[in-house]
Length: 89
Image (cartoon, rainbow, N blue to C red; front, side, top):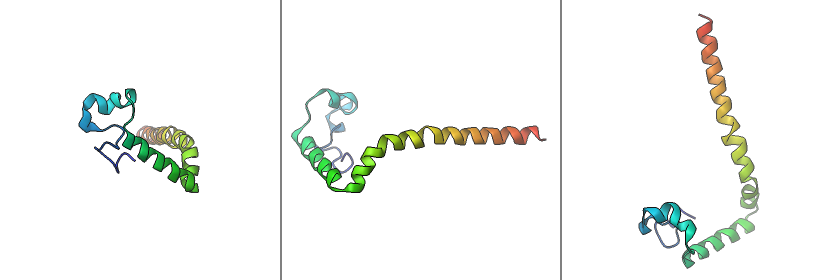
């Protein structure tokens, strides 16, 4: 939704309305009618497309499972590999 209607009235955090609005202000004011129209069409599309509905339900689990443990495991493995290669010499 954001990229398709970027910098228009249908963009929830339209940067053309100013720096403050783009970062915080859009949370504090009533949404433009174009934003609500686009949002309702997106929600209808999610409900009508089963895979999108499935993904929207799993999204929090997806973030927790991939963005938390995965980088930590990679960093741990690289650090452990680096330590083992330096102590063997």
